[in-house]
Every structure is written in structure tokens, then in C-alpha cells.
Image (cartoon, rainbow, N blue to C red; front, side, top):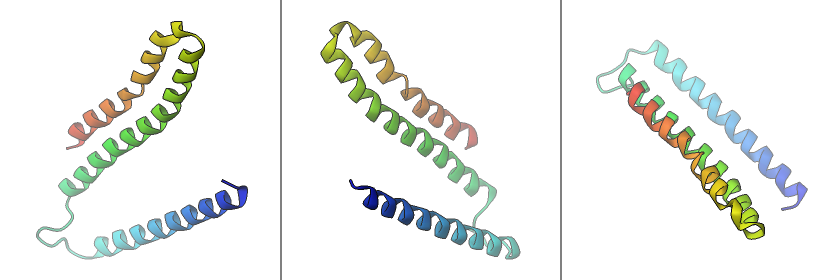
Length: 109
């Protein structure tokens, strides 16, 4: 990927995030002035969203970490097979993020 393409993608992501935050603020502002209708957003609904985000953050973090760790472990094991034990530990270690996210989802629920 060229630098120009990377800058364009980063700019598009930045604009998307700014628009998303702007829309979220407007939605929350409208919700603050209006009465909550039956079946509308309640504290239980917000807790459920928070629980989902806690699990999502852990899963995304684990995926990003493991994608790089596994590539490094494969390279290290190819050079020195004695590194396999440490490599397995390093591949399993990021899974704690998913487990913690799962636990937080139940705590927030």
C-alpha cells in the first residue's frame, strides 16, 4: 500500500468517526429532552450495549494481538524449534482479553 493510499484511508476513517460521534451526540441530546417511551432506551438497554462493547473490545484486541504474535512465533519456531513452548504460551496469553471481556459482559448485565 502506498503512502498516498494510506493517508486517504486514514482520512476517510477520521471523517467517518467524526460523523459517527456527531450523530451519537445528536441522538443522545434528543433522548435527553424527550420522555422515554415504552420499549425505548432504558438503563437496562444501555447496560446491555455496554456489555456488548466490553466483549467486542476484548475480541478485537485479541484478534489484533494474535495476528502479529502467531506470525512472529512461526518465524521463531522455524529458526529454533526449542521456542515452541514459549510460542504456545504467547499465543494463548491474549485470550485472557476475551475472557475478561466475557466476564465484564456478565458483570455489566
